[in-house]
Image 1: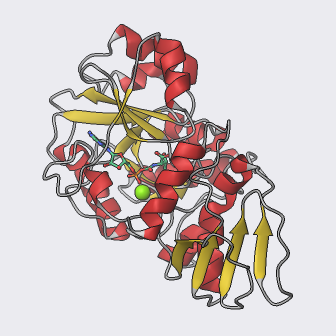
Image 2: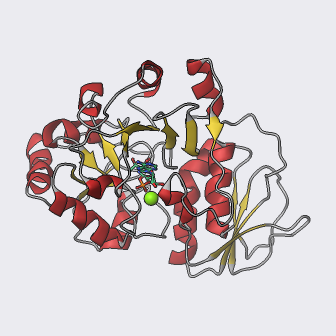
Image 3: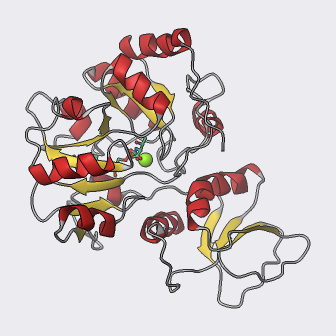
Length: 322
Ligand code: TXA
Ligand code: MG
């Protein structure tokens, strides 16, 4: 993993000027690359939706560089939420607050809540400190896997697209999204910050939101869209399936079965953090190499002590299309 945190002040200023001029700029965070735009500029935010081809009813996360900046957007920060900010910010936890009236409807898709997070990445923080708060969805075309490297952003938006290259993202899956706008607090999207970790800080139970089939008004609009999928078909490996097809990328999670010479095979040896870091690149690799499928060893029934399991299963099942 490389982290290029050494952007010169004049390079940084170039991106700040673009953002202040209403343009969009992709930048690295610890989770995935974000497609940034000035959170107070409606024209810039419209460009974010256009660039991604994102449905207008899917709200955006505001990225801030301090708790004070979060206060520009949140109508009220409950003391428990403040404890979470102290424990996990900067970091991969997005908090959903009741919004201040002046927050643009473009950001919240007309909801009365707003999502805010402080990313744990030196380049992202420098950029936000200089340019002000930025909305930033993942910097991928809607429906494609989130980008975890600058080249993924260029794959989707073209070679000349403005992207600040910070190397490969340290976590590789999008942030945990937690609603703190009413009690009990509820996880809308699982991520690196696990339910147990949240409960430990709060000292009270946190709910996990389940989107029931046919539910009309999901609490987190993004949950109703299929996500994260490559062109290649993502599937679980069958029980006892041998990795032997030459049109399939196999991800072996814990077993060390033998593969035929021709098969593309990646072994994870129960390193779930590495799987999280690489998952979206593996999806994109399958497409780059023209493979038909990504077959993942089924670990749904495996008891792991990895706090990433629930986030990984969520992303994989979405890519499979369940
Ligand atoms: O790690 C991340 O969160 C990355 C990096 C770039 O920070 N960003 C990201 O953004 O994943 P995006 O737009 O791809 O996903 C935002 C998620 C969506 O599922 C959206 O529906 C949900 O957050 N969301 C945003 N505002 C919300 C709100 N007010 N209420 C409920 N859900 C909200
Ligand atoms: Mg996204």
